[in-house]
Image 1 (spheres, rainbow, N blue to C red):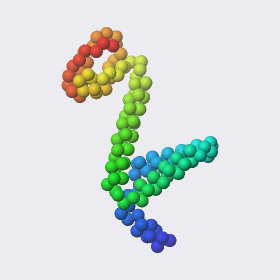
Image 2: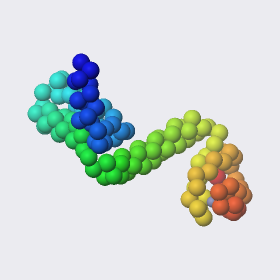
Image 3: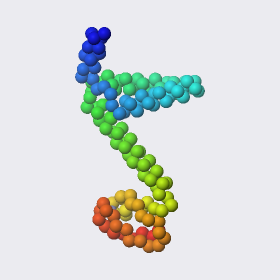
Image 4: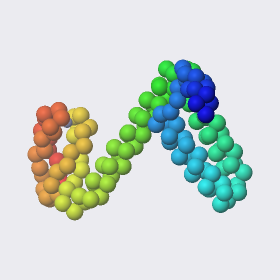
Length: 134
Ligand SMILES: [Zn+2]
């Protein structure tokens, strides 16, 4: 058993291994497998195989720089999506008492009280004031 583990460690030496993109691909593969098991639609089965092959290829790859670059791009997209979803959740939660507006100078998202009328809004990011009718 020890010898077997040693051989696995030796095999993985210099290879990329596991990252967030691979974790996502494994989740996607699992999801596709469940859908395929229910529907038996061959396209979903082929997609599942493709996704798991990519995940295995990525973890066994020796081109570590390229895999890190792919993971960084994936994390940028993932974090951007997460930020947007959180913003939408906050907008929905505060919909009765706050309004979300964008600063015309720096495009920062600002939250202002929902009081009808013309308001002078101060942007903390670019430190400028602007008028906004709510
Ligand atoms: Zn601003």
